[in-house]
Image 1 (cartoon, rainbow, N blue to C red):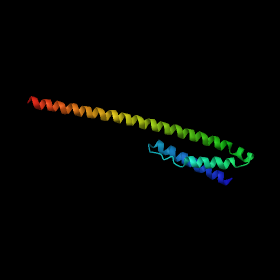
Image 2: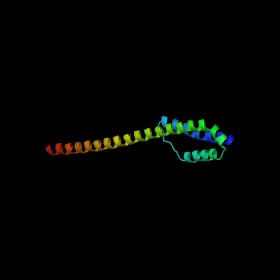
Image 3: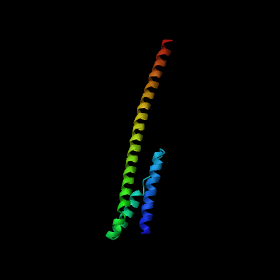
Image 4: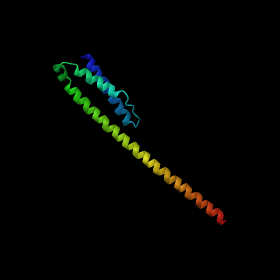
Length: 112
């Protein structure tokens, strides 16, 4: 049963560390989480029914943590997409203003 606890701890640490990174505005690398969860689930499925029942609450809590991580990632992605759209619009406006200013200068220079 020590193996199961280690697997749970590994996944929980990964999720906790990822959520902390997101909270601090950092990028998160999710590679490996799927393998850790798959390994944990496969190991739990290999246990007897009585032993599997012992892990029901832990699995439920882990599922809730994974769902929270999913929400955090979605929120971060949406904020980043908004920022990209804003920067794109801001850049287009900036270029338009520079172009307009450049034309205005050219017109003034021709008038003098």
